[in-house]
Length: 183
Image 1 (cartoon, rainbow, N blue to C red):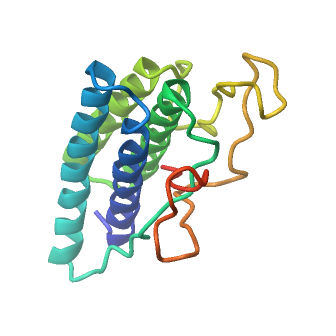
Image 2 (image 1 turned 30 degrees about the horizontal axis):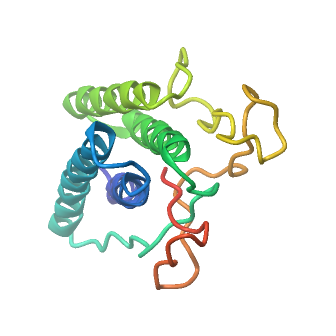
């Protein structure tokens, strides 16, 4: 697989780790928080595998220190919405790499995309016939504050195919509404 493909996977997984770190804090102690923490760990392992592949090719992963959250993180509903978005965007990351892979890698990446799709739906995303083929931000705003009626798509990043790095190298302070947009 090309270094560019591994970079995309590394960035997507890094964005997922960041996103889960932000959203886990929105849940009270219990099963949802534990699941978010477990998924952050799982995504960190996937990120580390991608980074190891890049290191083997002597390529820097160039991952930003922070990402932008596309909506306010104001409780468990927003946290579930972000988790669904994180996973939906990972589906796209993995699906975009498949055409350039060898057969054995295609199966692995298709499996990772399918797993991310299932996790996305488990967090509340709408199932799609062809995951990875459209802008994944189709979840309604948790509070309707984006001007949309419940059940209508919330505005997503226009044409964004990857995480949106925060321009400042420092991570934003909690409660600022900044943070992670994950693939």
